[in-house]
Length: 124
Image 1 (cartoon, rainbow, N blue to C red):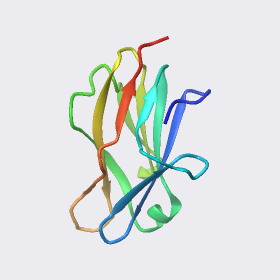
Image 2: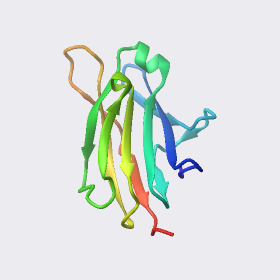
Image 3: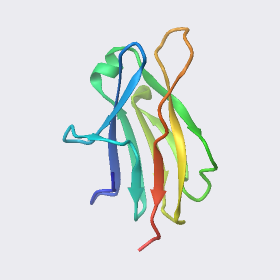
Image 4: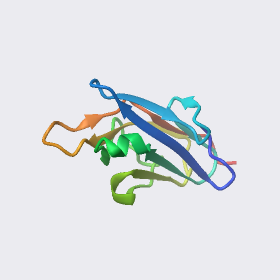
């Protein structure tokens, strides 16, 4: 998914089933990969869907699989853990892979998403 005109990439996250299946959608409800490609300074915002929030899930962080240096500038938790914002100034071309870390509010292990990635295209 690419950044839109207001410099934000919005990705909606649903977690369902006993195996914690992750589904990513755009604002229109179309299923997407969960990846983001930016070509300008952008916020990448992952938002949990209402059924996922109602099931007790919340974001607790991000686990980067490789250094986010030069790709992701900061990570912010918003709206009581229902949103996670990655700030990307798009200063460097490259990519970083990561996992969204969620809690389901009980004493069970944390849940990790499949590996989305952020890819920075050279600044234009």
